[in-house]
Length: 245
Image 1 (cartoon, rainbow, N blue to C red):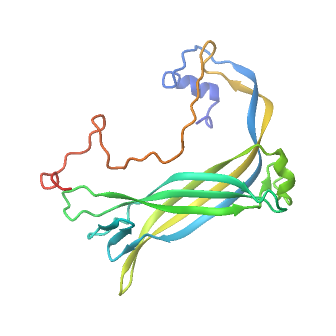
Image 2 (cartoon, rainbow, N blue to C red; image 1 turned 180 degrees about the horizontal axis):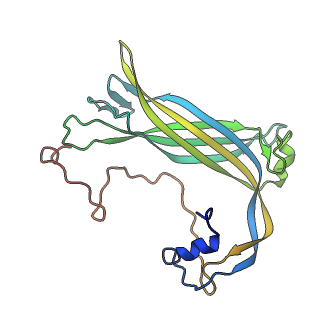
Image 3 (cartoon, helix red, strand yellow; image 1 turned 60 degrees about the vertical axis):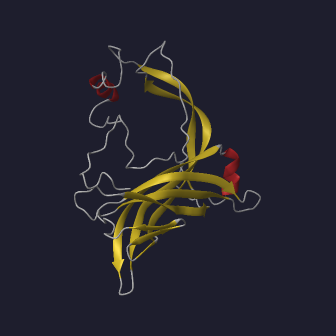
C-alpha cells in the first residue's frame, strides 16, 4: 500500500470511495493477532540460460512439431509460475533441508507470415528450480543457522517468494539456430512459526461487517493469452485471417 508519502489513515481516506470505506473517520485499534512470524530465510539468485526446444525455426513437443517459419519475436517474453512447492527432507538425518520446486511456462510470440494477421502465442513448460536448500539465516541476528535440525521443532510452516523474469534471444550457427530463454531473479524461502502478538492497526470496515476468506488453489488453471469471450472480445481479424485454423 502506498503509504510512503503520507500516513496510512490519510491515504485510506483519500481513496475511501475506491476501497469501499463508508466511515467518516478511521480509528487506530490495538489488535491481538495470531500470525505467521518468519524465523529463518534462505535466498537463491537465479540466472539460467535455458534452450527452448527449437531447431531451425521449429518448436518440438511430445505431440509433434509446431511450425514457426517466420521465427519467434525476441522482443517479447513472458514468464508465469504454474507451480511452487516446498517440502522438508532429510528430517531423520543431521542435515535436513527444504526441497524447493518451481515450475513455469515461458510464453513466446511468433512472427506472423502475413503482417495483417495477429501473432500466435505458445506456452513452453519448464522446470525452473529443483533444489534442496539447507543454509538458512536467522531473522533475529542475520547469522547463518549452523544446525537447522535444532530450529525445526519451532517451525510450523513455510512460504516462498518467487521473483523471476525472462527474455528470449536467438543463437545462430552454420548448422542450426535455436532460441534461448534467460531466466533471472530470486527465490526466497521462509520458515515461520505461529505467534501471538499485539499490534496497532487501522480497521477500515468496522463492526458489524463480516470478513470471509477463500484460499486460492494455486495449481495451473488453464486458458491461454489468445482466449476471448463475449465480455472481452478480441480484435477483429483481417478477412484473410478469419478462416485460418
